[in-house]
Amino acid sequence: QVQLVESGGGLVQAGGSLRLSCAASGRTSSNYNMGWFRLAPGREREFVAGISRGGGATAYGDPMKGRFTISRDNAKNTMYLQMNSLKPEDTGLYSCAAGVYGVGPEQGRYAYWGQGTQVTVSS
Image 1: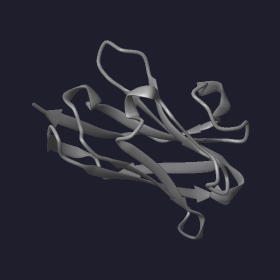
Image 2: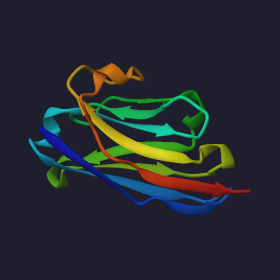
Image 3: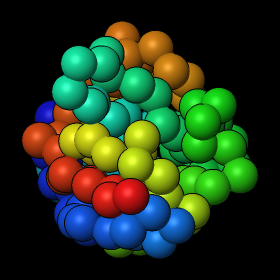
Image 4: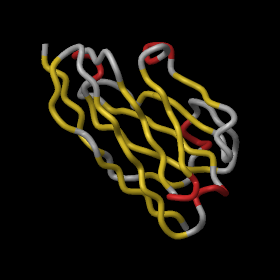
């Protein structure tokens, strides 16, 4: 069992930056691939980014490429999402997830989910 807690969300103007964190407890997070998803009102949950156990492989949703960077520090059991050049359409509830079936956008790869942190980007 892995418990995930997100932090770092908030209100930011368009063009600004935020850094989200996902702290894992329970089993060692380095045993798991991890990812970020977001949920906006009226939209389906969307894959943001994923990272492999050791951090050597990453994947991004197309709207995030070039603006977001996913990373992890296994010594701290923490994953990060650096978000730059934020747009109003990036607004949503950002949740982290952990699983053992590779890195990718399919939600079924991830067995454990956090509650999320809200990101609001104003125009």
